[in-house]
Every structure is written in C-alpha cells, then in structure tokens.
Image (cartoon, rainbow, N blue to C red; front, top):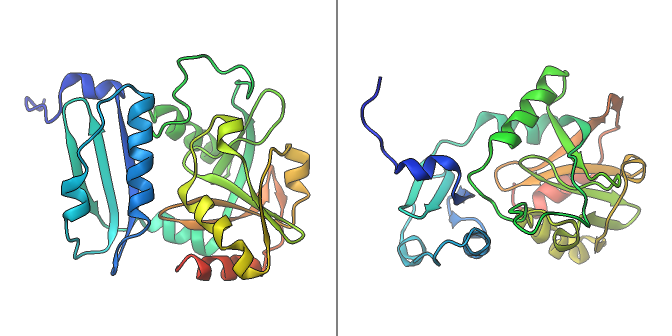
Length: 245
C-alpha cells in the first residue's frame, strides 16, 4: 500500500476542474480559450478564481498533451506524450453508439455542473467503456427529449449541406467545446455557413458527415452510428487542415 498521498483527500472527490490543451511546436493551441473555460468551470463549482499568470508566462518547449488541474488546494500543470488513441481516431474515425443520458435539457437540477469541465469524470469513462463492450469506440449522449447533447469527452459537429453545425452549449447545458467553436469560426473561409442548433438523432443520422471534436483529436469522423456504416467525407481532411492538424 502506498502511504504517500500526493493530493488532498478532498481533491479525490472530483471537487476541481481541468483542461487538456494540444501542445504544438509553436506553443499551446488556443490556450487563452482553455484558460477562460477553466475559470468558467471553476466559477460553476464555486472555486476561487485561479491565478493563471504562471501558466501564461511559461515557455513550453515540448509537444504533447498539456494538462491543467485546479482544485481548492492546488494548481498543477503537466505535459505528457500525445496519446496514440487520439492519433488513431483522427486517422481512422470512430464507430459510435447513441445512448439516453437520462437528463432533460429543460429540467437540469439547479446544482448541475454539466457545463463545467470538472474532475468528476468517472461516468464519462464508464460510458466509453460501455461503448467498447458493445463493439464501438465512443458514444453520443441524448437527452430524454431525444436531442443530441455531446460525447463523453468530445463535442458533436456535423455537416448538413453547406451548414457546419454543433449543439448550442447554453441551450443544451453542456460543456462549451473549444475546438468545435474554433472550427465554426473558420467555416466562412471554407465556403460553409456556421450554425448552433439542437438536433434529434434521426436528423443527425441524415447529416452528410458527423465528427467528434476535441483538443487532442481535432476531429474524429463518425464512420458508423448505431451499427449503420457511414461513407467517409471529403470534408474531414479539409477541416483538419483548417485546424492545423
């Protein structure tokens, strides 16, 4: 048994927030947006506003995954190698299932922290393990009304005609996706229209292309939804290139 506790016991209860940033040769990608979301998440959990000056002033000389963890007792920054799974999902795409999360977009409890990137991630990982046991790579959560919400560790992005879309985070009460928002800001330069709107699963299935977006993956194209194969989209490479992948 390890008799050394590296964090305060209260930090083990998920009472904290985190961010994972794609560390590129030119520095942390979209760092200011990640730090802003970290502060927003901290506010939702009632944490004091963190002093981010040491992170903003730090010079990172390696590439990989930059992880920032903030709790009531610590602010920790670490760099780890880029996960092979993210590279594989970006290259090969993902097979995805849909699952009812059991929550309503209109009746979240007042104490909900669903819009924060909190350390309470056990359910997220459990959901992905469940999908793996069903022979899939990931899943998309649905509300009780049948609306698409998000994936356990990613935002949902889709293309319908010339409209590049994602779920509106405030309306759905989900975590605002930084990569998804940045991608939509680039839509006009690609000849596409950007939109945030609620969508049901049948409408999503009818989209021209679907992706899961996150900082490390960039975009992982959905190659099968609930067991139905989907043709690969020529837009995947274009959008990844626009994001700098």
